[in-house]
Each structure stands twice: as C-alpha cells, then as structure tokens.
Amino acid sequence: MDMAIEAQFHVLAVDDNLIDRKLIEKLLKTSSFQVTAVDSGSKALEFLGLQEEEQRNHHPQEMEVNLIITDYSMPGMTGYDLLRKIKESSSLKDIPVVIMSSENIPSRINRCLEEGAEDFFLKPVQLSDVSKLRPHLLRRKAEEEEEKPKRNIRKRKTIEESLTHMLMEDLNKFISIEDIFGELNYEFSHKRWKFGS
Amino acid sequence: MDGVVQLQRQLLDYTTLLFQEGFLNDQFTQLQQLQDETNPDFVVEVVSLFFEDSERLLNELANTLDQQSIDFRKVDSHVHQLKGSSSSIGAQRVQNVCIAFRNFCDAQNTEGCLKCLQQVKNEYALVKNKLETLFQLEQQILAAGGSIPM
Image 1 (cartoon, rainbow over the protein chains, first blue to last red):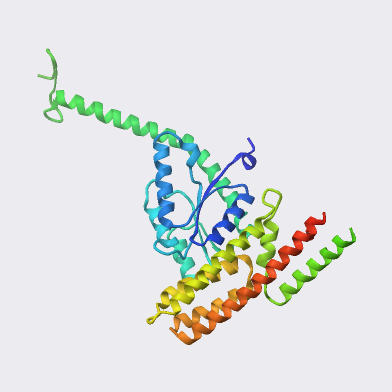
Image 2 (cartoon, each protein chain N blue to C red; image 1 turned 135 degrees about the vertical axis):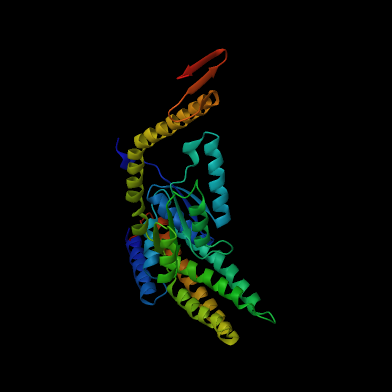
C-alpha cells in the first residue's frame, strides 16, 4: 500500500481572521488535506467534542482529526489556551497542534513548544510551511501502525491479569489460609477438603 | 491577437510598478501561485474579502476613536486585525501603517492614532484602486481570449 497517496489527513484550522482562514484552508487543500475551518478556540473544542461522540457512536473514520493548526492571537481563548486544553484532555492530547502567529516573539514560541506544540509557523503562512506537515503525519501514522500489534499484546496481558485477579478473589472467598505452613481449608457447597488435618 | 499581447504587456508592467512602489509584496505572488483550475477566482475572492473586512474595520476604528474616552485596547485589536489581513494578501503599505498605528495605541496617543487612521484610510483606498485596475486588466485579457501571464 502506498501510504503517501492513500493517506487522507483531516486538519482542523482555527483562526478568527476571515482572510487568514480562507488562506490556510486553501494552503491545506492544495496540499491534499481535508479541512475543517473554525473561527474560535471554543468552536474548535466543540467540533473535537462532537468528533469524540461520533467515535463513541462507532463512526470513527469520518470525523477523526489528525492535526490542529491554530492562530495564537484570538479573542477569548487564545491559541495557547486551546493548546493547553487539548494537551490536558486524555482523548485529544495525542493530536499534534501547530501554532501560527504574525509576531516573532521567541518567548512566545518557546512557551508553545514547551506546552507540547508540534511546530510554530510565522504568518503569513506559506505553502512551504504546510508541505512540512504531511511527511510528519505519515511518520506518525507509520509509528502507530507499528504500535498496534504491541498494543494488542499489552491489552491481552491486562485482560489476563484482571481475570486471574478475579478468579483468585473468588477462590479466596472459599479458601482461608490459616497459616503459612499449615492447613488449607476449601469449602465448596457440600464438599469439604482439608489438607493436613 | 495583437491586442492581447499588448494587454499582457500592460498587465506585467503595471504589476511590476505596484511591487516597485511597495503597494504589493511577495505574499501577493504567493496568492497568485495558489490559484489554479479548481479555484480560478481565488485571488479575486480573497482580495474581495479583504476589501469587505477592511472597510468594516476602518468604520470600527473611526467609531472607537470618536469616543469621549477612547478604549485603546479596542483600537489595537482592530488594527491588529487589519495588519494581519493586509499582511496575508501582501498589501505592504497598509501593513506598514498598521505597525506605526499599533505603537501609537500602546502609547495611548490619540493624535498619533488619528493621524494613522487617516493614513491607513488613504493607503487602503490606493491599494484598492490599484488592485481593481489589475483585476480589470486580467478580465480584459481573458475576454480577448488570452491567458494571464505569470
């Protein structure tokens, strides 16, 4: 399977400026991304929350967001606030977030990267910036595919462990270990087993 | 076909002049490069949005600066928006005035702000006029059966 051609990534773009929203949408579409563009952090969270619900209702592929790209300076919830909320959410924290800003302020950039932003683009964003995203997402996808069998083994182990635990708990209801060296009494309906005496 | 060649030459010369005079910068070229068959009116669409948005912002700025007690944070917020959009379409001169404008906001300098408002209105009117002329030339070329030279 040629992942480079087949992989369809869905990007959520967040920017309160109408012109910038149109521009980022075009840049992303030109780079073959599926795009949803919203004008605020709260609308972004709403969309992501809705997306979560869809996944619970078993429509995983349609709405899945693979990347979030957001402007920094927005009224109400800034891009930084949005970044934090996403990284604090157990269901959303693994979605990569890219920040855009018209201002080249190193402390701002560092703050965002420290908070977990994947990258920082200076506005006006150009095609060369956006074209950096695809190889990055493809790599992540490849890593995830590798992780899957490992994750299944871990899942199985966890299930086995909890089953064993459950069985032991039930057994212990019938068995009381009187002393380390001594007798083991087992009562099961009418039967009574005694070890030692 | 002679007419088309002439129009194309006119368009190229006009565009070059706009760049030389600082009305437009490379970002405008970036927009033109994004235009393709799937979206043949992309530049006109974005620029039209810019015109609408700017006019709204300029009105807001006039209102905000007209108040008894000026809310400089509000003024700055509008100028920030205008700076952003002008930067995104490559309207260099408008963008430059916005930078100066923001400095006056920071200093809460009413007179400076009013002067900048006037300046940005002028620069906006100029670039609007230039872009409309440019689009008209493009339309003429297309109507005459020619293609837009890049």
